[in-house]
Structures are given as C-alpha cells and as structure tokens.
Amino acid sequence: MKFPIVAYGDPVLRRKATAIGPDEYPNIKDLVDNMFETMYGARGVGLAAPQVGLSMRLFVIDASVFDDEEPALKGFKKAFINATILEETGEEWGFNEGCLSIPDIREDVYRKPTVKISYYDENWKHYEETFSGMAARVIQHEYDHIEGKLFTDKLSPLRKRLIEKRLTDISKGIVDVEYKMKFPNVKKGR
Image (cartoon, one colour):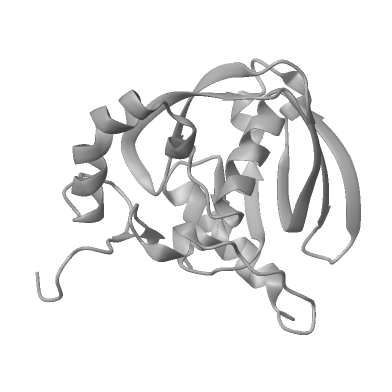
C-alpha cells in the first residue's frame, strides 16, 4: 500500500519522533513493506515515518542506486527502528540533496562521511554499525527526519531566503509531482 507523502509545512515533519516497541507494532514488517513501496513509487532512496504522517522513529533506505559509484552498496536495503546516531566523524563533504517531502528543490548539503548508529531492524534485532559514504549520507538525511529536522535547515540564511517562496508554494500544493502527497496548507474542497 502506498501512503501519501506529507509535504513541507506539516507539523509532523518538525516533531521529534517517538520510539516504538514490538508490542505496540506487531505488524511492523507490513509498515516497513508499505514504506518501501511508497518510497519506490516516488523514486526515492529513503523515507522516514514522519514523511507519511507517523511520528515514530522508523526510516527505510535503499542506497543500491549508488552502487555504480560505491560497489559495496549493491543490494543495500535496510529498515532502521529506534535509531540513535552514536558518532559522526570525518571532514564534511557536500552533495546535492533532495527530499520527497520537498519536491523540486535540491541543494548542496554538507555532512560528515562516517556515521556510527545503533538501531533495530524489522525483526527487532539490534545492531550497532558504522557506515560511510553515500550510505552514511542517506542515513543522516533520514535520521534528521525522525529528529524533526529537514535538509533545508542546513542551508545558509541566504539560500533559505532564496527558496522561501518555493517552500511556501509546496506547502500550498503548488508543485507538480508524480506521486500522491498531502499538503498542509491546501483548503478542503480545492
């Protein structure tokens, strides 16, 4: 089942998400599958639960699209539940990022190249792993979502001002997307 993706401006994207447990979500695998289906339908490489309106600490990524540049990413598809970044290391590097909740806007964002993270998978198995390169970048981007942050928060004040009208338009539904979205500032009946 594909979910509508929540657009920029919705308060759920600014809320720090809540940890979840196996008793609360016995069908977590179904939710993870639906999130992957939603992500693939929108041609994304990552999707966090807040982006589908659920304020929970869950995100999914499939970084295998970058396996031409980083062969280690072949088949790199994971769910991260109750993730906590333990450490970010290295010299920040820039990459042009986008976001399914902020369509048609891409900006250079600087992040550290290596991340150590603690998380559970959809089988509630615990991991503590270190990722580098594009895997680390996608993880950090999605992790920001469960912390109530967006990639636009990392932009300079000038860049933010330059895209402010476009962000407002997105929140009003004035954007052309090929996937289903939920816009916070669209009046009912429109």
